[in-house]
Structure formats: C-alpha cells, structure tokens
Length: 329
Image (cartoon, rainbow, N blue to C red; front, side, top):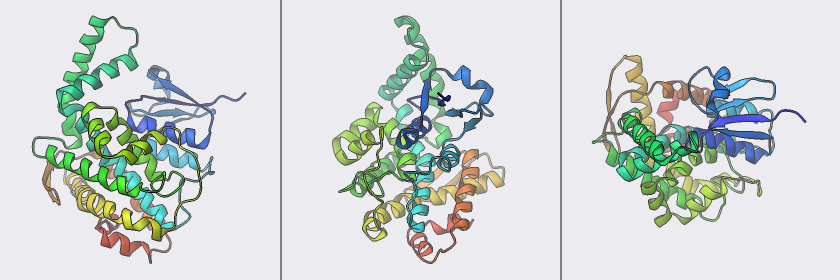
C-alpha cells in the first residue's frame, strides 16, 4: 500500500480543516496528523500550518495553493463550476473567506474572556494531551495571554470590533439565504468557495459567542457547517440564473463594500511601507497595520481573473457588486 498524504494541522486552524475537508470530499487517502507538528518541520518553509506531505515526500504549504495543486491530480468531482463566471465568483469568495472571514473567526475567538478561556484550553488539550489539571490551566493561561493581544493582526481593535461583528452577523444571514433549498453554496456539490468560507465558520461555530449567534439564527448555515465536515457530490452545480439572486447581495454587501476597498488600502500601505493605514469602508473608518500575506494572495486572484478568457458576462457582475476595481489593480 502506498503512503497516504499526511496533513499536519489542527482542528482549531481554519486553513487546516479546510484542506482536510477537501481531501475527504475527493476520497483521497490521507492521515490527519494533529499534535505532531515536529514531524512536519523538515517540510516547512514557513512556521505555519497546515503542512501537507505528499506520498513522494514533497512538503506543501498554504491552503489555497495546496488545494489548487492537488485539484489537478484529483479533478473529479470538480470544485469548479463549468460556467466560467461562477467559477471565478467561487474563487473570489474563497479568497474572501480566507482573508476577511478570518477576521470574524480570530476576533470572536480572542475578544472576550469566555472565548479566550475556551480556545486556550482546547489548544492545550489538542497539542499537549494528558497534562495534569494544574499544568493544563497554567499553559492555557500562557496561551491566552499570548494570543489575546494578537487580534491586531487581523485588524481587530476598539474601533473595528463592532464592524467585524456586524459583518459576521450580516454575512451569516446572507449565507443562510444562499443555502435556502441547496446543500452547498453553488448547488448540489461543494465549490472552491465552500471550502474557503467553511474553514472560518466551522471554527467560529466552535467558540462560545460566535457559535451561539449561529445556532440562534442560522439553522441552514449550521447544517452546512456540519455537512462540510464530510462533503459529498450530490449532483451538479446550479445554473447562474438560479444562484445570482442570493449570491449578488453577498458579493455586494460583504466582498465589494468591505473586502475590496480594504484590500486596495492594505496593498497601498505595503507599497508605501506604511506602519498603519486607514480606509473608509461601507461600515465606517477602518484602521490597522497592513497584512503582508494578503498582498500576495490577491495577486493570484488577479492572475485568475486575467486568465478568464471571456469577461463579457463577468465584468458587469463585478462592476455591479463593487469588486471590479480591486481585480484590475
């Protein structure tokens, strides 16, 4: 028997479970290696998870490139709609989930004592199982004290916290509408967008505050979160006309009004070597330190946009939702 793929990650890492969900969907043989990060060190270029080690011994990092590389090797069932417009919108939402959705998850996880305590304790138990109660409590306290100040990394601060929470609640309602009558965001099978958004929302649901918000008002979204643990191909992607009535409000209110102008401002701040930037979003003034990684990932999304041969139908949708400017740079 050949060596399976090995996924070194954590249940509490949205990018790790995103990759694991994709492997499960594809039925690709893999081993989930939680709490074994030392084994992954020789394959890491950066101290980040997940790390996927191929049967040939190649180390892969960064959830989106991992999935894109392996999708070529496991093309069926495809996560990309045949409709090139829908395929691009799915990729756009995947990027939105990775970058803006992470603000939701990280903020809620570390903004309040109840969530801080829950997350810190679970991190200890997953990474250092078997500790005595006193050692476990001491380590959880150390993690909490280290992680809580780091909310600045995703832009969470006193001024932006209400905006992040309002965005989370609004996006949850819009996703609830998108999931009306369909098991996945683009139809009867998961698309690229499902995996990117799901990793963040799955983790958010595991935390007390965000989880309670979802449980109280979004039953279809919660069912989708559970479904994406073991996603299945239950049929085709839906036609564009059936999807756009609920997809466009999500793109306009969240991607176009918040994520895209933030992306451009973040990119400019990095180009200017600025320590901090402020941008006016639909939700209000947003100030944070720039995020270096996102400047690279948006370039990949722009390359995908440029590779879309026929933009006749795509550009009007992107223009209407406020997303076109960020893709043209």
